[in-house]
Length: 289
Image 1 (spheres, rainbow, N blue to C red):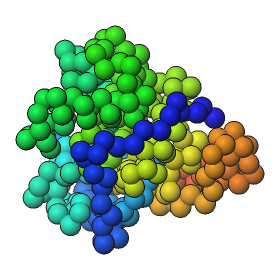
Image 2 (cartoon, rainbow, N blue to C red):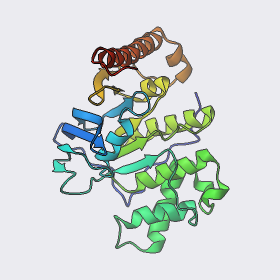
Image 3 (cartoon, rainbow, N blue to C red):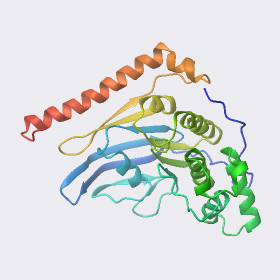
Image 4 (tube, rainbow, N blue to C red):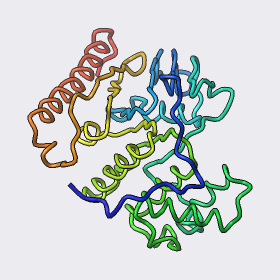
């Protein structure tokens, strides 16, 4: 297991997200979505996400995982249904969330610190430039980038850029973090470091996380619950699975445990079964393969 350099507390200027009375952070009901009004991607999807839950979306490419995440973020519309976050529909107000994509989405003409300051300005319009710069430095230090404040994206490795993107999302101050395959393009060591970082931050700050990945080990290591997406003729088929594996501090022992290996095998079998059932349904209805 890769050990983080050190833990850093949140800057005092931005309080930790408050725990809410309601049980569900996100409620999605009867979500339909089609490309060009013809190709059905999501069909009558219902989903509840609890406060403080780490939820992972898994499934093959093209089955609507990232599309659904973008809907939760308010970046993609849908044909029917509604998504409610903190009691407010995304149709009425843009969701209060931090978003991290696989491609980093940093402004190349701004330093790491300036990229974070830009996000901070959205929620801290009355603070001075000096105060914002100090808070940005604290968040970059939190993700072990305190040494790279003045570096531009072109001067940073992929792992450093993704750390900066995570710092920017965290600095926005929301207790909802949406992550779309954020570690997919990184090398294995950097990927493990950032997985551990997210685990640490989530534990410190009680954030709700919705995370998209294709990696089974990553999903089990991070998630409280996994939603499997499988393609179907009439849109994605989903199934919710609780992760029964007890998480420890030793990654190697966890991955080698019978509990982990057994659940990993059952999860892969479940994913394959859903995909095969979808194919069988299409063939029986004359769709072909």
